[in-house]
Image (cartoon, rainbow, N blue to C red; front, side, top):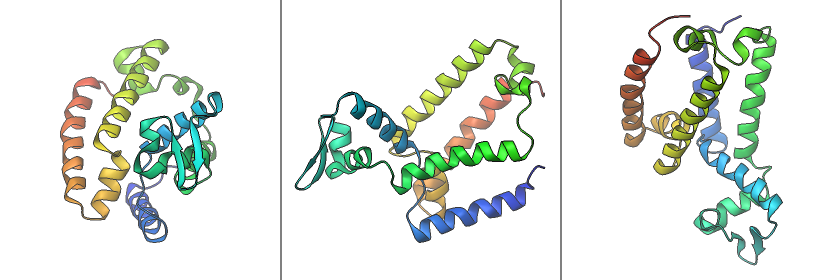
Length: 183
């Protein structure tokens, strides 16, 4: 049962509003850095250390902002990290409640297959490269689409509107060029 886009938009807006009202603006790209830090700290326990002033790290990125990221690596059960895990779980549960994802679409969606064929390696490589570029750009910009566009626009930040305009100016022509055939 697909959700009506209007109802979905209103529900998404309410979730964002409640998050900002009750906790803080939503952003998720930093949590990938935190996950990397958790894995690295498991391999190298001296990566993050507790001090009298809080937390620090031998990694300059984790140590910046007075050890804010080092603290999140040391204590991952915080709002932001749990929020990202809950988003993934919510996506999975939504797919399951709608009857699952067809076996033919699990590794290669129909739209991809119509435009680029059945090569799973090509699909995975493109997905990895696209994800890498987006995450790298998000880290360079100091935030992600949810932080800049969604939370930024909701807080009437000019940078949020500029980011949204840039994202759509780039995404629409690229998608029209890449996906000429419909599924």
